[in-house]
Amino acid sequence: MADGVRVRAVPLGREAAPFVDLLWTVYDGDPHWIPTLRRVQMERLDPEQTPFLRYGQAQLFIVERDGRDIGRISAQINPLHDAKWGERAGFFGHFDCVDDHEAAVALFAAAESWLRNRGAHFCRGPFSFTINDESGCLVEGFDSPPMIAMPHGRRWFPDLIEACGYDKVKDLWAYRYPVDAPLGERRERGRQRILEHPRVTVRPFNKRELRRDVRIAAEIFNEAWVDNWGSVPITEAEADRLAADLVQFADPELTAIVEIDGDPAAMVISIPNLNECARDLDGRLFPFGWAKLLWRLKRRPTSGRVMLLGVRQKWRTREFATLGVMLTAEVHVRGAAQGYEWAELGWVLEDNHLLTSALRRTDAEVYKVYRIYQRAL
View 1 (cartoon, rainbow, N blue to C red):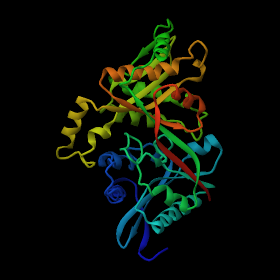
View 2 (tube, rainbow, N blue to C red):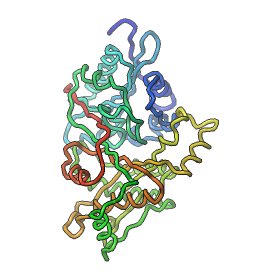
View 3 (tube, rainbow, N blue to C red):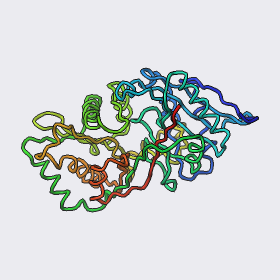
View 4 (tube, one colour):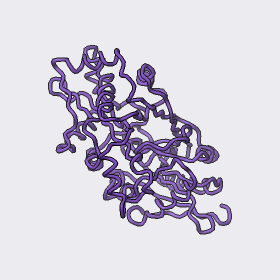
């Protein structure tokens, strides 16, 4: 390790503040970076607030040069992944570093050593902390701000990761979808076919029963994407955590649960782009951040994100073939009525040919690419 470069382990919980604070060093001068609210970042590193930190294992690391914090990484073991996929997997996440090769090497060496000591056979990432959280390293799309709950990055991150011996295993695509454009006759017919079906009921999430409805959505999601590469189930505790987050800013008009004969069959959760409202808050809610944020959310941002969407496998029949089309079309119609201009659809696996083919028949375009890397240990 080079003189002046030192890695230290950082505890989870309240003592993780330096792990958050160094982001202002890494992203200094980046006009597109929008920091996630500090309070939210600290909650994600708190085992009392983040369910994964209660059932998984994780360690945070910071690298400093000459006493100045300049980079970070997390290492984690996810028992749900290993149980489902029969692997001894290790994961890294929260990788943010200045353009310093020696610092990056030191970070990955620390993370990999921690994972090896726990029996991991490979290291894959970035995931912060699971594949259901912020995933991937940005490799295309540096010229625009990050969408809510999606990662950002500096242009040198991919080079640093690859220089540490990591190779691409999968790309994740994020689509930019114009909501203020016409829906199109074909998709409108598909939407109406479902809405008018006598066995179908479509309703928005009930904000007073948000915990119940998010649990329903999580069950649908887990079944719909069970065979997706690298997928792990959303636990009940994680669904409850999501509901607690959504209750503060969710727009019920951007959500839907589809029932067939009273059975929850499909769902979509879209959320307003909180980043658009928080761009000038510098991650702080006090003293005036809360007031600005609530006022801007009330006026509604112009963008949002389709975060979760799924159709239960038992209802992927010829009779309900347009169910998936209906979900995106319904969000389009409702979003346009609320004044939204565009939405991010993502992420989508690059080799999810069924979904990418369907999106090519809309006005959606890939505008950001996130890469998952892996290295044998």
